[in-house]
Length: 566
Image 1: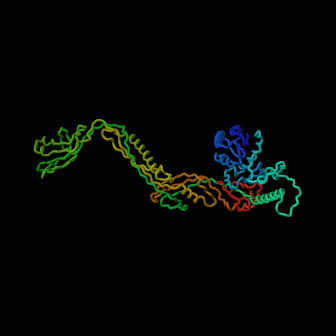
Image 2 (image 1 turned 45 degrees about the vertical axis):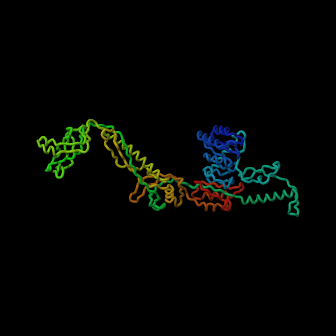
Image 3 (image 1 turned 135 degrees about the horizontal axis):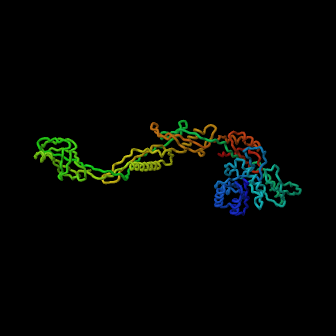
């Protein structure tokens, strides 16, 4: 099974025909060779369909075309765009493994450079070899279209094609060009420099074109250099401090500016109480004891007081009721029912002391008495609802989730695009619950939560990493890095956040673009390869020269462009 398949696309081929050829191609890599105007790839839907089929068939797709619009569309759909410049590969030594590629022509010096690996590596040879292997694949046996110079001699002067013959250029680098072979009659120049007649004007025009062509030949040379620096794996950790006390990124202290956020929230809810207990609770309340006698009256704890409807209550403490002066003496005391039950929840009213009546002391029974201003309460009997341990645990879990979400939402609303790396570190406060009220089957619970952290700009952290790692012989690009975070803590003493940034990705050898351009000026093919092979830190390189007749790098640095591909 061939590893590479060339599909030569004709101008009027339909997309469906080309797609069918692509599906049937027994190869892992398919290269479409297109004319500048192709019916098959005029719509964006064609690229979408091709991308889907390539993914389903696990095939790699490349395009070879001189139309910049088709090339741009191919790049947009992640297809390789090949910039081959000749119909056959340049002969190289079988032992050569040099990854420095030199092309004698580029389509447009100021066009956007191709930065993909296929342009920089030796894949150009691979495409040209595949073209030779697949030359007979299409029935029409159409020659593969090749990008040509923006200006050629036939653009300047077009003659009768019957007078042309095919002439091969030695060296195997250029496609055979048609060169006019004209028969000139002997011409005797006239004394006058002014052209005379039709032949004179023709001679004058041809001479002018020759001069113009010579000027273009000498001055039009340009070079584009694309270099891929040597990369190495980066895996390092940096301890970072972020705070609003830091004014700017400081590489020596590993600190970055930040904004402090301190958020506190409380959540309260009612939850069902699924437990129950047998209860027998005594009613209680308060009464005021009055003394209308001339002597103070001591009363011990548990002294009995009887309500108007015959319910007995006991005092909880010993008291001394003051003697009457300008009015009855008075003191208040807490009492509790003699028995449990809701019938002891008696309304406000008068109370007597049965002990005086039992001793036959009618005066004290009449003049020492009690009164309540409110009903007795809390007297119960039977069963009551209680919150079980499972009820309490479920309530705490629910409140924890709610308070965490509330704090995170509030934090998100305040950070305004800043990076916060510990928004899940919510401090949960003490869980509080109340017993179910009498006659109810629910209980109330509450929980508080808070976070104190620092938000910072991701660009500030990337700047710190570049300062810490990117010095010396290495170039660090933030877009080539990934970040994760460890040991995130709030520092009360420094009033900021400390954490460890784990940085992974790639760093690259640092190259002096200006020095490389300076050293390439005026060099030819072998000299270019020799120089670039000797520069430390270059993984792959490609030098493209234009127009097609240029064989060396221009001596003017303004005509040389160098791009670094990472």
